[in-house]
Image (cartoon, rainbow, N blue to C red; front, side):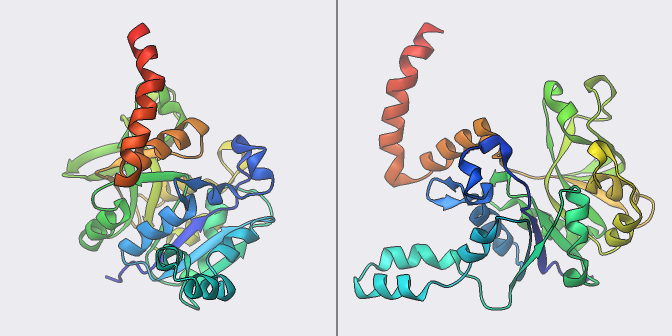
Length: 295
């Protein structure tokens, strides 16, 4: 079985929920504490053994390409000033030459269409898809958990998590036949069902490991919800072929595609930082204490 060496990052969205900030700054470049969202996704991919990074972008996203490039003048200035801490902070944002590719999606035709654009670069091997909106805080990075399971399992694998019934209609939902640890054997996928019709309480979140057969499915896939090419529809069409499993990862997910989720992630990751924890805890206590007492 071939290892998972490549990852696709669909980053062509407009980020309209964060306007006006995203009028000039790509949503993926918004800072979560002191790193942009896209850096968390790339760090997770690296921790899972990913060696090649494929970004599906759109017009106005050149800041992403610039971010992952070298900045010799800045590095020289920091080095001459003896600012080694700042130099160390820059290193994760730099890609080795030839490991990052950027593909332009000219019109918003859905996640499935975005993934299909990576076909030539992915080739005939399994690959990961990471949605940077989903930031996962975990002791072992979520994609690393999945890569280890996929090495034993094979087939398509999608990350899942338990979702409250009130929110289940916003998710693709898995129909689980059986489970063994975190691995779920699936018999189906349903896109955004009503709560009373959902086949389980587990929704699909933004981590996938896909076999190259998905590209043929995507090429044949008719537009689905919203008139877009839905990745979950193409995966569901491969249930009886390549096979599909869910993976209930261990970790806490934050939906950073929403303002509320972004703020929750900022607080959680800041509180993880020893140099920020005490001051932030005091501030939150002052602000939230009276409100909690009143409640």
